[in-house]
Structures are given as C-alpha cells and as structure tokens.
Image 1 (cartoon, helix red, strand yellow):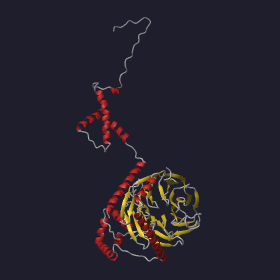
Image 2 (cartoon, one colour; image 1 turned 180 degrees about the horizontal axis):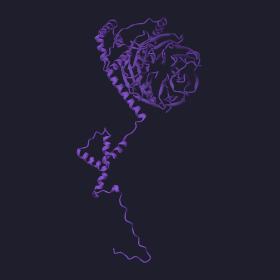
Image 3 (spheres, one colour; image 1 turned 90 degrees about the vertical axis):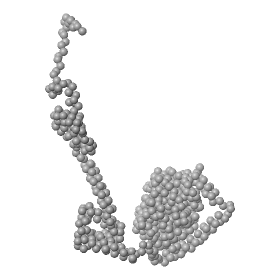
Image 4 (tube, one colour; image 1 turned 120 degrees about the vertical axis):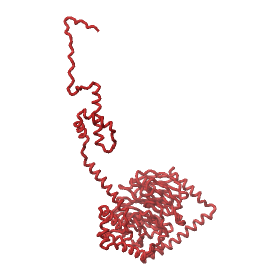
Length: 560
C-alpha cells in the first residue's frame, strides 16, 4: 500500500525500535538451536532424579547419557544439578523413625521365632530342668508350669543362638565333660516311661456327704429314667400317637413366633435369663452385680437380688420346683458371679446361702433335677457340686485343660455335661463320678451345652459359629448346624417334648431349629447387640432373650 500524505496539523506517530534482547539470551548459534537448549533442562532434571531414586533401577543407554552430558555442559551443568539435588533431600519425621523402628523389631521377633522353632528342645520336664541348669539358668520360676518352662528354655536357646554363643557354650560343655546331659535326659525319659504309664485311671477318696449324695442321685435317676422309657414305649405302641405329626404341628406354630414384649433390664449389659418352672416369672442377671425378677408375660419388675455380689453376675437359675411346691421364702433362685461365689435367694430377695470355694470367676450354673444339688462351672478349670441346703462342697471335679464355661444336667439326673475353653465337652456319670464321654469336634471354645428331654441327645454351641448335636447312644456327633455368623453364646432345648432347640449368638439373633431334621424354623431378630442368654419356658410357649443392648425380649407364637 502506498504511503498516504499527512494531513496538515497532524503530527506523525513514530514507533520506537524494539529493545535489544538480554545478553544471556543472545546466542551465536542459529535460531533453531534455542529450543534444543530449552529441552535439555528437563533431561538434566530427569538424570538427577534417576540418580537419587534407587528403587527404579533403570539404566540409560550410552547414547542418551552422551546427549545428557552434552546438554548439561551447554547449561553450565553442575549448578543446576546441585539445585535439583538439594530440593530432593528431606528430613525424616519422628513418626517415620518410630514406624521404622517398630518394623525392625517385628522383623527381629519373627526371625527369633523362626530360629526358636528350628531348635530341638526336650519334652520331658526333668530333661528341661537339666538343660536349664547346664545353661546356668533358674530351673523353675514361681508359678511356672511345664509347658511354660519348656518355652522359656526354647527362648533362651534361641537368644544364645542369635548371639552366636550357643555353639561356644556347647563346645565348652563338651570340653569340660558336661556332654553327659544328653545321657541324663535319656535316663530321665526312660525313668518316667517306666514309673508313670501313659494312661492311668486313679481315684480320690470322697467324703461321706458325697457318698450319700450319689446314693440319692442313683435312686432319683432310676425312677425318672424308668418313667421316661415307659412313656416313650407307650407313645410308640399307641396307634393314635403320631410323633412326626406332633413335630409338624409344633414347628408350624413356631414359624409364627414374634416379639411379645421388650423391656430395658438394667443399666449395663445383661448376661443370662431363666424361666421359673411354671413360666410365671423370669429372672435376669447383669454386669451391675444384681439379678432381677420379672413377671410374665408383661415383663414388669417384681423383685431384685442385690447387695451380696461384689462383681458382675454371670448366670441365674431357678430351682426345679420354684413357684410350684417350693415356698416363696425358700431358696428359689441361684446366681453365679465373677467374685468366685454362687448364692441362693428367696423370691422376696433375701440372701439364704453362699457357695464359696472356686479360685476364679464363675461362668454358668445349673440345678440338679432333684433340686437338692447345685453345679457351678468356673474359670479355675473345675466344676463343683454343692449341697443346696447346707452349702457344703460335695465334689470338686477336674478334667478340662482350660476354663470350664458351661454345665448342664440330664432330665433323669444321672448324667452331667461340662464344656469349656479347651473346645471339649465331657459327659459325667453322677452316680459313679466317671467321665464316660469326651466329645471332640469343635475347633474353638464351647460356651453352651444342654440335654434334650429324650435323654440321649446333647447340643453344644461354640465360638466356631456352629451348634453340634451329639447322640450319646452312638457316642458321636449326629449333626453339625452352621448356626450363626458369630459365636454361639448359648443353646437351649424346648423342655416339654424336645421338639426344637434355640441358639443365641453374638451376631445379634436367636434362631429356632427343628430337633427332628435340624432345619431352621425361625430367626428371632430385634436386638441391637450381642445376645448373651436365652431360655425356653417349660411348656414351650415363650422364649426369652437378653443382650448386651441391656434389653429383655419375650417371644411367643400366639401373635400372628
């Protein structure tokens, strides 16, 4: 376009020339070289980052290293690399140091455990003592048991092995003639094998009171067993009696079971519940150290048992004749507590008798069907039999390797069953004191046990989430019920005809199962926390459950 002439009176606008570029951007190279200089900056950074990151483990090929070196040289190299390196350095925090130290300790403990597991440690206690003495260690500590002593020897040997001193010590012993320890261990093993057989049946002398009690139990159980067998024979011989039809009618009615009432039972979690013989009263126990009495079916408090237990009450049970032939002022209710005591109460809340002797807290208790004796299970690994009226301890029964948690008596009164933390259930003959059955099958502690009214079925509930039904005639497990998604805290048979059984669990539900084919009948859901106890009324009309949510819930099949 041609230049236009400037109009008169108008000053022409002259644009100033652009300023010269800064000296550090002036390059003698062609213009196309500038992008090459800019692209070398991230390459220099990448090289420094790879040098400071050992975890990547990647190597550059020779061609890339040459290009990066050339680029670093064009940029001055070392000052920029030093700046990037300084930015990657950081200070380790105190929490990181502690976490790293904990990790190192766990690794050391794991290595020490593996080293200890690989060591050969004698199993005979006498040999363990000899080995401890040879290592200049105390042969026993206060209250130390055989397995604990062996574990201590294993730990000592593992530590010496880790410190590199075990071989030196063994060499010194052999050089000084102390290598005869092995011969002493063999001699000790042989002496024990000769003196003590692997299985030995032994008896301890009982008291006169125990002899009299067993005599009374024998007479009581024979008459009860005879009447039970005659009743079963009469039902089978009667053409009008149809047991399968009876089962179907009862189980069909149980499908309509619903909640009748819900009541807050205490300020702390409830631990157990029990119906009276006529199902007119319900007793509950709680962690506050008291037990309460409630009316049925409206669940109104009518009594309280307090002032004697110093710890939480773990279980409660009614006398078999309570509210029937037994006077209200007599001993109607028994409670067990974590203060190692069991107590007997009248219905008006008066304390009548204490049963003291256990060395650790009590778990469950049960009346013998005759009502004259009381059984208690304890964490001291024993269960004991007491005379209800006198409070005398008649029997201290061992047999479990860990704490005993549950106890139950057969309807005839001839048998008792105990279960515990050793995952074992034992059946005892009350007339002779012998352990006649050891029921093994559960893989975790057994917390609940109950006899069926038929006399030969036994149900157990365990922490392995299952309920097992055992046939005492066949001496084996009859059926395994995958009952719950958490531990089974208690199991109860329907007392009248044994038509169904109920399990309570820490999954917050109780479930009703058919005693004929062990199929699920009804799930009783309503509690907001773990169920700790369940009981079934004598005529099977009501089911009571108590929970850690502090509530009592009463269920029946009358409401549709």
